[in-house]
Length: 376
Image (cartoon, rainbow, N blue to C red; front, top):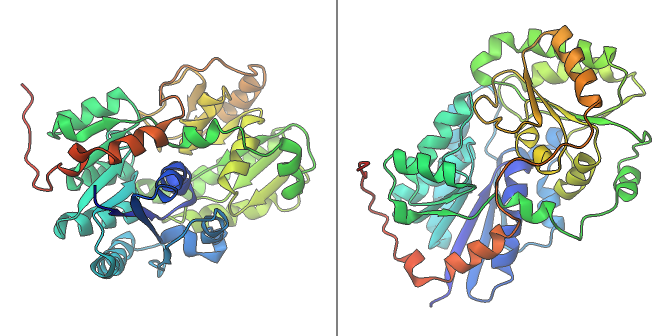
């Protein structure tokens, strides 16, 4: 097989964690020429400029691109990403573009690939959520030629959407490859690295829901009131840079004088996993509470609609934005401790399944001329 040129596109700390093991295993192979297009939150100092973490990972062929003028106009940022990525692939001429999830950067990659007759593989399509993310994710799936799903349920949804079954491959959730790694640092090392002094703690990750932007100020005020009133230590990570994130960060200013709270713009993915694995619980509306926390048998308090329809685990307590519900939820999960894992997103070898696929001649014969398939 001729050496294939592959481009991974990453726009956030979260999607990089998902694709990191896939980048690693293909860059270490001598039959692929692997490149990484880095944009979105990775390039913003306010959110930790996480391109630095990508560079520290030892990856080659990293191309940085700034796509954000501001966070108000997602459509303009999408347009800018399309333009930048189009020029990029016009220069390097890849055989395959790999995107993940439901962000505008992934949509830009799928649009550019499909309109330039370059194969596009979408990781974790067919998932459900309760916001604009779902529309974006399904749109990316329709623009993609190949689908790498986390479980059989997601595969069935894609087939229901008219995708060709022979182009859908269940490889599991690639972040489990990192979660299962025996090379994760110790908890003491991570706590020393981030100067975290407390022994017992919870994690808070709360992102804006762009379709509820008029409610965010009231929602985050209720959340902050509850966190301050609860007698728990917290590690808090900045929200995604979506519309409404500044409202959240303004409200987080109220945490500054609390000795029970440490706030970070971003955490290195492996270090975050160590902290999550040892947390009492995670609270907010992050997908980490839906995917990673149940895998580590950590309880989740999921607030609001952002992860609606995704919270299938019994480890997840779904509540609304009311202080009494949040405080009662915190009290409840503190009594639970570790909970039995009851989700299926693979067994931590997505990278090996991925590499096996890429080594197959049949994979590269998948057509970029798509047709809708009716259910029989």
